[in-house]
Amino acid sequence: MSAVNPDAFFDREYTAPLQAMIDHVITVEGPVRDDALARRIARAHGWLRTGSKIRDRVVTLARARFPMVQEEVGTFFWPAGTDQTRWPSFRHPAGDEPRPVDEIALPELVALAWVVKDEGITGEDAITAMARDAGLQKLRAASRDRLRRAWTMASSEGGE
Image (cartoon, rainbow, N blue to C red):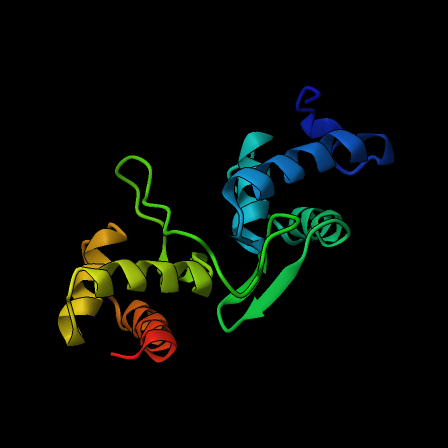
């Protein structure tokens, strides 16, 4: 991968190195929500803020090479060659920072729901267990709703 060059971010000559960074993030961290991807690329360039021009450049380059799925919380870019309706496992947060539930693709949350189901946990306890496994200290209403939706999808696939 080429050296990071914030001064060249919008230059045509910088497209290939920038694309390589985007490819790496999506391949390693995907599915990844579009604004989270733009934020990762901006931080790699030393920027604390991710403005609309930065986001637009990153999303335009990602859109040209990766499948994307629109969810109610945003657009997710998926690694090439993956099934956008299923994800094999839930990726637990690295370190102490939980991943916001709205930045996790729904199929990955369904994979988490399957793990909880396999443990025999049901009902509201299942939602609480999913939140705990996701690393959440506090369960906001929006996160609860998203986890409940994933739980319902997992339950309808295999019956409860």
